[in-house]
Image (cartoon, rainbow, N blue to C red):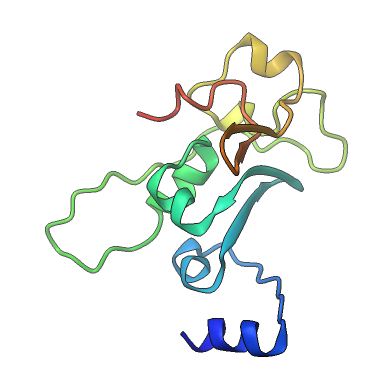
Length: 131
């Protein structure tokens, strides 16, 4: 509430950078998830948590600790090599760590596309990763 009051009263805009999406959820109206310097998912905070489409975003969300003892949400542990951020190849930067990667992912970097109103994803298979 306080942040919304400050934003309205002072016409305030801010950028908050964090790896902890549980904190970002409460501070941001819109969230841009980045992987190796590129935006891979961009949408409203509410939409991101309700309808996550990029595999990297899913992994970040699965790492958020849940205080409930009986919660059996599986954590996604990323495997594979991290692409070089200095001289990345012309492929999806997440392909080497993505369980959905295929030849298309290695043939070119996916563009950030609007897949639902206001929901943008840079993934060749965003709907397949929605399991």
